[in-house]
Length: 219
Figure 1: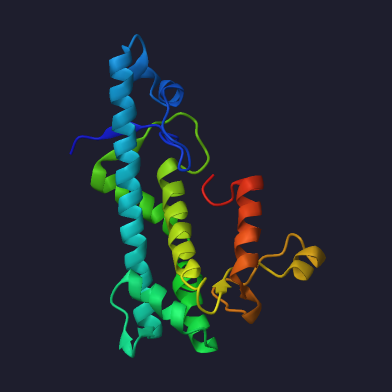
Figure 2: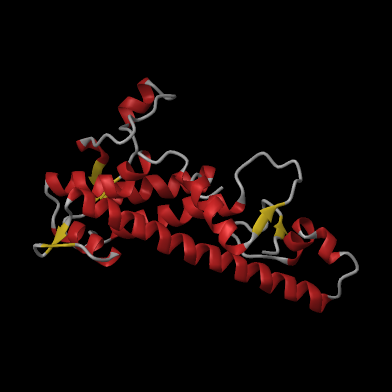
C-alpha cells in the first residue's frame, strides 16, 4: 500500500479548513501553487477531515453498543440494537439502575480501555494509508483529537435526549465543593457516582463555559 504523509495538524477539529492553514501544514504542496491548486488542496483536506469524523463516529457508536450489551441496556423491554435505542432508553428511564448503565456506556467502558483514542487513530491511519510526517510534533495528532471530539459529540446526543422528559444528564465533573477542596484531584475511573447525574441546564452551562475558556473537548 502506498502511504500518504500528513501533518499531525492537517486539520483543526472545530475549525474550517482555510487557505492559510493549508499553506502552513502542506507547505511543500503549496510552494508556487496556483489559487486553483490551493482550492483543490483545501477540498482534499476537507474530504479527509469528513471521512475521519464519519469513521470515528460510527466506530465509537459501535463501541457504545458493545458496552450497552455488556450491561444489559434495554428499550421497551428489549436489548438495544442501535445508537438511537441508547438515547431512547435514557430519555424514558432515569432510574438509578439505568443511570449506572448509561454511565458505563458513555464513560466507564472507555475508562476500561485506556489509550482508546490513540488505538483508533492507529487503526484509521492504517486503513487509509496515512502516516504522520516527522515534524517534531509531540502533542496529539488531529486524528486522535477527532476521536475524542466525536466521542464527546455522541455523549452530548445521549444526554440531550432528555431535555423534554426527566431533564437529567450524566457527566464526569466532580462537584464544585470537591473541586474547590482538591482542585488537582481526579475522579476514580470506571466508578459511577450519583452526584455525576445533574440537571441538564447546569450540565450545558458548565460545558459551554469550559469549551469557551479552554477548548477542553477537541483541542
